[in-house]
Length: 484
Image (cartoon, rainbow, N blue to C red; front, side, top):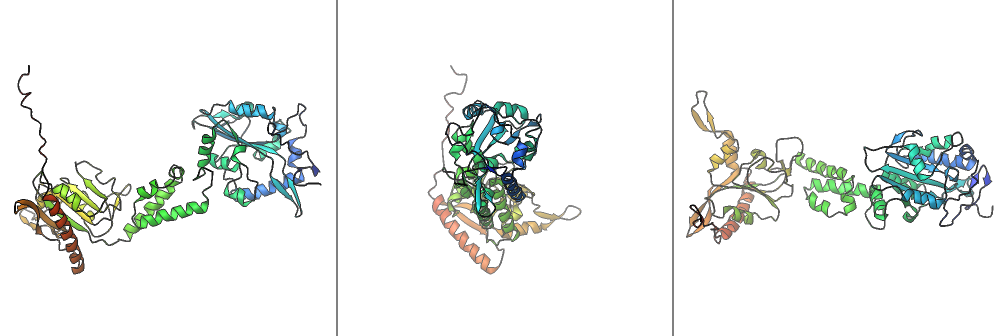
C-alpha cells in the first residue's frame, strides 16, 4: 500500500479514495453500487471500527441515548448514518435538499466524515469508509414526522433487504441530546477527543440554519467564546465549586452570575450551578453563622426624614427597604444585603430576622430567602409595643379569667434585641433619641453592638438635621365649584 492512510479497507481490499472535490463530497454515479450494507458491516476494518464504537458507547461516547426506529415511525428527532450506496442524488442536490427545508419548522445539520482513521492491528493504519451523518429536529416539540418523509426530503434511500443491517446498526435512530450530537459531528465532544478522532471544522457542516443558528444549537453543549472553544467537564466542575463556595460565603449570586458570558447564563446547565449555590447557602445557615446583628426601632412623626436618614446611616451600599404592605416582602432579599429597613410596615418571622445568626426570611420550605446582614432598622409612627402587636406578637400574658398579668416572654425577648429610639427636636433640629438599649448577648457582643449603634446614630443625626420636608402640594382652589 503506497499510502495506507488514504485508502479505505472494504472486505480486506483497498477501496477507491474519497473524492475530495469541493462540489462532490460524496461521489455519485448514475450506476449505483449493488454492494449490500451487509458486506460493509462484515468487512474486517468495519468490524474493528464497530468494536471500537461499541466500547466507546459503553463509556457513553456520544451520550445520544438514541432509539432505533422503523421506516414509518413518527419522530421528533432523527439521526442518520449512511454511505454513498444510500444516496439517490449528487452532493449539490443533496445540499439543496437540506437548504430547502424550512428552519422555522425543522433543524437539519449534516457532515461527511472522510478523514476518520482506524488502526489495522498495531503497525497499519487505514481510513474508515467515508460516510454521511445527518441530524434532524422538529422546532415544535409537539410536532412529529414520519421517518420515510425525512429520508425523501433529503434524498436518502435505505434499500430493503440490502441495508437492513446498516439501519439496525444505528443507521437510523432518534437523538437523545441534539446539541451534544451537533458537537459530535465535528468530533469535539470530550469522548471523541479522548478517542483521538479526527476533528472536523464547523465550516464542513451543511445546514438549513445560518452560521449563528448552528452555533446556537451547538451552544447547548456549552461554549463560551466566538471561536467555538469548548467548556469541558472540568470547567463545569470548577464553576460548580465556585458557586458552592459563593453560597457558603453568602455572596451575591446575581452579580457573579451576570458577569458570566451569555452562552453560559443561557445554558440549561446553569440551573444545576444555581442549585449548587443555594446548597452552599443552606449549609451556611445550618452551620448557624454568628452575626452581631444591630436592631434599631425608630418612632417619629411623618415627613420628619427618619426613613431617609436611616437609609443613609446604614453603612452598606446594598440594603433592602420594605414598605407598602402585602406578602412576599423579602422575595428579593439576598444573603449579602448588609441591612434591612422596614418603613411603616410589619415584618414576618420577626424573631428569626432579629436573631444573631444567618436566617431564613419566611417559615416555609421552598423559595425562602436567606439573610446574613447585621443592621435591622424599623421606622414607624407607632409605639414599639403597638408595632410588635401588628407583627403578630402577644405583648401581655393573661390569666384564665382574662386579667392582664404583665409583659409576655416574647415581648421581653424582642425588647432586649432592639435599640428603641424616637425622633425628637433637640436644640432646634430633629435628632435620634435613645429610649432603651439592646441588652441581648454577651458583654463583648453588647459592646460591639454599642459601637455599631453609635456609628449609625451619628450618621443619622448628621443627615436628618439638614433634611428639608417636601411641601409639594397641589392648589385646587381654581377648580373648586361648578367651573365655567
